[in-house]
Image 1 (cartoon, helix red, strand yellow):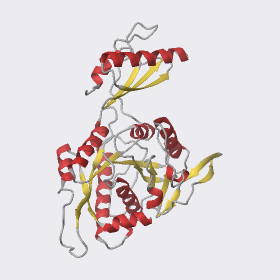
Image 2 (cartoon, rainbow, N blue to C red; image 1 turned 90 degrees about the horizontal axis):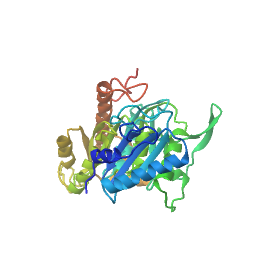
Image 3 (cartoon, rainbow, N blue to C red; image 1 turned 30 degrees about the horizontal axis):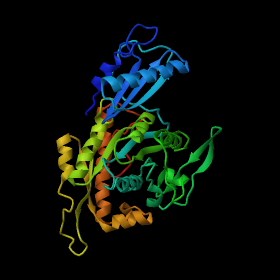
Image 4 (cartoon, helix red, strand yellow; image 1 turned 45 degrees about the vertical axis):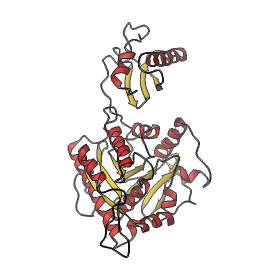
Length: 382
C-alpha cells in the first residue's frame, strides 16, 4: 500500500489536544509529517510536560494511523514540549540543521543502492577539491560500512583530543589535505556495528558537533546506500547545501537512484540536488585505449538526469587502477597526468559550479557562500 502525507494528516485531525478543544493538526501540535514507503515519521509539540501526556499522545497517534491509514505502517513519533503550541496549521517544513561555524558548504553524496562506487567518488572528489586549493572535510556517515579510513590509508590512525575554548573536541585525522572522521576509527576491523537508528544518529552527532573541523570550504558527507534513518538524521543535524547522487548506467541502479533524488526533493526535506554522477560508465582495456565497452549500459545516468531535470555532473570510467588505488589508500585522482585524474577534475569542476549556481539562485544555508569560480583556483568568498 502506498502511503501519503495527506492521509496521515487527515487521520491526525481526529485526535483532540487536551485542554484546547482543537484537533492536533488544527492546533499546530503536528509540526511535521514524513512518509517513506511504509514508514511514517510524525513530529509533535505539546504544552503538557508530563511523561503521561507524552505517552498518551504517542499511543493515540499510533492507534489512529494504524486504524485510519495503514495497520502495518512503521511509525516513529518525536514528541517535544513547547511553551505553547503553534497557533496556525503547519507548513511543509524544510529540515534545517544547526549552523556549523567555519563550514561554508556541505555536500551530501548519496546513492540509491550499494556497490555503485559512491564512497570511491566521494574520496576522489575530496582529494581533487583539496588539490584545487580548497579546505576540505569528509564525514564518513556510512555507519555500517565505513570505508574512508582504508581509502585514505589511515586505518590505524585515531582522532586526537584537542582543547578548544575550554572544551575537549575531536581532531579529525588528516590525509592528502582532507580532514576526515569515520566510525571506522573507533571500531576494530573485524567488528560489526550493530546499532539501532538512535545510537547511529548519536554517534554521527558526536562526529559533527564534538569535533574541531576548523575552517572548511567543502564538507563532504559519504552517506550510506538507500534512503533511511541516517539520511534524515544528517539533514536534521546539518544545513546541507546540496546533494550529489551516484549511480551506474544499469537499470536496477537507476531505479534506486531515482528514489534517492526523490528523497532530497521531498517538500519536508527540500535539499537541492546538485546533480547525478555516472560511475563505471564504460570500460577501456589498457591494450585497446581507443575502445569503450558499455558493460552496464550506455549513458543511463545521463538520461536519468535529463528525465528528472537535474544536472549531469559527469562520467567516471570503469578502470582497474581506481579500485587498486582505493585498496591501497591513495585515491586514483592523485595519479597526475592520467585520464582518471582528468575525469575527476571535470566532475569536481562541475560540482563546484553547481554549488555556485545553487548559492546564487537559492537562499544560503551557511553564513558565507561561494559566489564565483575561476578555473581550478579556490572560489572567492564573501
